Length: 251
Image 1 (cartoon, rainbow, N blue to C red):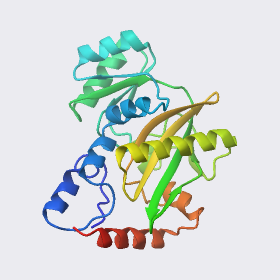
Image 2: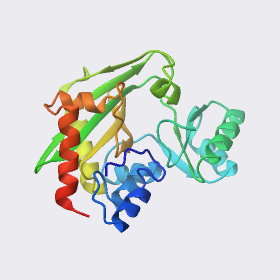
Image 3: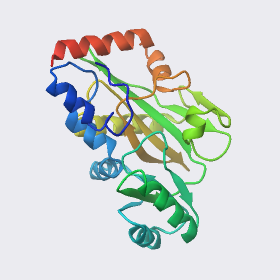
Image 4: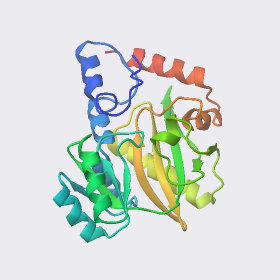
């Protein structure tokens, strides 16, 4: 099985546990690694413990907690469900009314929300990881740029606005090296298996880890397969290697 599913029950270890119980070999992260990687707060805390910079953040379970976080962090803020992907339920808050609305929206989707400082117009960089036949690839970072705002669900999947993907990103060698090093640290600490994509922000020469995705998108507009192609792995070969690796591991 190749669980081409995002976030809740897709990447969080739920379906992986079901496959293990059914004795079905599968590609990608196992149950434990999936659960950690799917939780934005857990991965950010892990990143900080590995000396990987992140934007200041807090976690809350209700509106009161978000208000306390805002008092500590200061506006503008970005509010996200802790365990959803594809930018679902994400809002920017510039005042208390915005924050209340954003919190209510996020809490409808997840019982915990993450509140972090909003970084205005950063560069959005991605680093891909792929492992097969005892060989690991950490790709040179690629870049996603939008005409305005952040790379939200509408831009990703509904064709709203102009989105450009480029690989490799035009960044200094030191930035490239640090992003690849940060990704390797996260892959080792989480126990990522087979593949993932780690996302970062770059602003004024500073790198900030955003999140990790253990089943990267494979659509025509996705950066992950393009990054692997630039390292000599075509999409068809990538799928075959995932299948081969899962069969060799067994159920």
